[in-house]
Length: 207
Image (cartoon, rainbow, N blue to C red; front, side, top):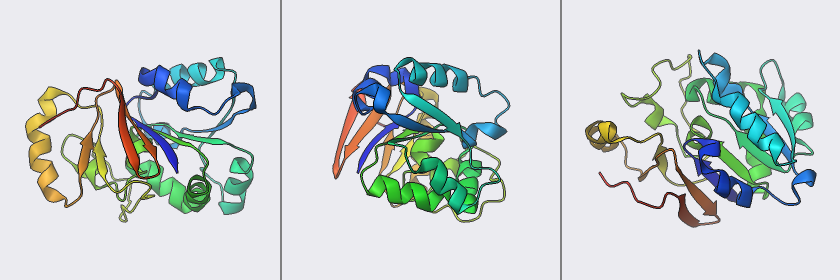
């Protein structure tokens, strides 16, 4: 598997440009904006969409609402990059599972299709989205009870890190037995097989 797990997507433009399969004009991106659909101000969608289309890639926006598994499979069948945007992590995981997109995406990524996660999109790459319940994260669980996620990586993540979250994170991290990797907006994790590399701003965030 090959993944680029980011805190803020195009805030690590250089890493994204290196990660996107080339030639760009032959790359078909599934730009999944589900998580942003319930956000009051998803201003980042336009900027991200503009950036991706500016590379010359073929970008198709999709959210899987009112889709079934066969619809999802058709939408994703010719895509050679999965790009999951940020927003409400609970809503994202709920729709992915209800629609069947969860299984289709998992199959594609495990068979080698590159995956980019942005914020919530990075969270669902983890074994569980339990970290989205932590006190400084999303408050509305959208009726989701099973927090089991893709499990592409064996650790949890906390994104959009700022120093003001330091003490909160120290306490919240005691709730899990899993390793937690922390990212600022100018950072990402490049995952290739079992290798994980911090890219972008390489200053590690130590609590």
